[in-house]
Image (cartoon, rainbow, N blue to C red; front, side):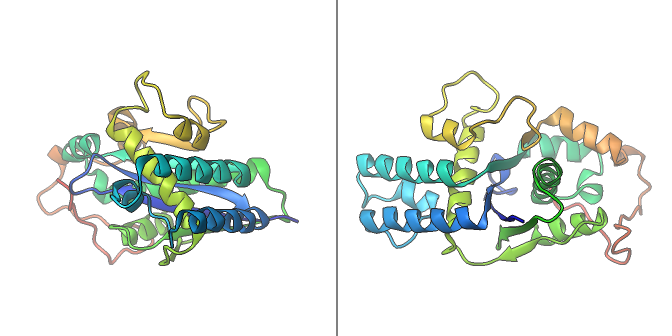
Length: 261
């Protein structure tokens, strides 16, 4: 019997950034313990108490060459002690355009809910392909994201176990997920996921083994969002009656409203 755990963090924001990203890794408990031990050694050697990618990249107290060296070591640790990277991205420009046409937010959820739900789908695929019936998998999301409640509602809608949120950025597994989510957001911001731009080595190592159309890493482009709306189905707004209301079957008294425009 094997005991696995998956940790996820998010990057981006639906109000003022290009995308919303949810990303993280699956590993065995033993691998996470070894990752934590080596991760803390690197931070101690660099004189860091904790690691948060945004703060790390924008710090003026750390020379550039030292940042690059620390980052290479941390990525190597992730590469050595995790099994599967998983990341899903909702592009905000496309989301807003499709949400203007379809009642997507009311039916499918806010961007974080859609990305988180896709992460859950990837985990189920991985569980089916790689785990034996006696294995266990615990899943954790870093707490504090906007539309966290909408993600919980989306999981209830699909009769799935509600996500477990942990509010503690000192958990090293969340620091690894934060690094990955930040890199995915950077790649999205610079259009590196769709064009033939060279990815820096650290990013390529984080997404090792991922093939085109890999179900474990995905981007919601306009066509994907429209397909999701038509499959759900999410009705066209132009055909909605003036007083139309929406609710999930799992919480019928909780009316769902459009908040993203």
